[in-house]
Image (cartoon, rainbow, N blue to C red; front, top):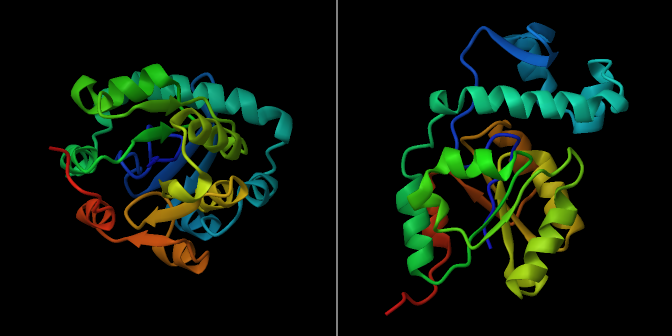
Length: 212
C-alpha cells in the first residue's frame, strides 16, 4: 500500500512548494499569522512538528483551527497546484503490477480526489483523509486493516520526517521522496527503508508480476 503524505494532497504527488521569497502560515482571515523569510524557513526544516510549533510560539490549541483554515485555503487554490510530472504514469505502472494503492492525507478526501482528477483517483482502492498533525499512524493502521494486509506488506511513501515517524509507529515500512517538502539530507538521516530520487524509482521498487 502506497501513500503520499503531507498536508497537500500528498507531498510525494503534488507540487505545492511555495516560490522563493516568503513562506506564509495563515491562521484565519486575510492576515498571515507568520511570515517566514526563505532563509528562516530553511533553518526550521530540521525541526520536528512539536519543536517547530514551539519555535514559532504556536500553542497546541490553535493547531486544529490552523489546519482547518489551511485546508480551506488550499481548496481555493487547487487549480494552481499541479501534480508532479510522472505521477499518473507511476501510479498506472504500480496498479498494473497488482500493487494496492492507498492515500493517507491531512487534507479532506474531496480535495484529494479533485486534486488528483477522476482517472488518477480511481487507481486508489483506499482513502484515509483528514489526519491530524500527529494522527497519521492511526490512519495507517486503519488502511492496513481495510486492505487486509499485514504491516510488513505495507510501505508508506511521504516527504516529511513525521511521515517516517508515523509509519514506524504503525509498524509499517517507510519510503521518502527527495522532491517534496523536507530536505533530502534530513530525510536520509532518518534511515527510511527506501529513498526515492525520481518518480520512476517508485515503480521500479515494486516489481510484482503484471496483471494479465
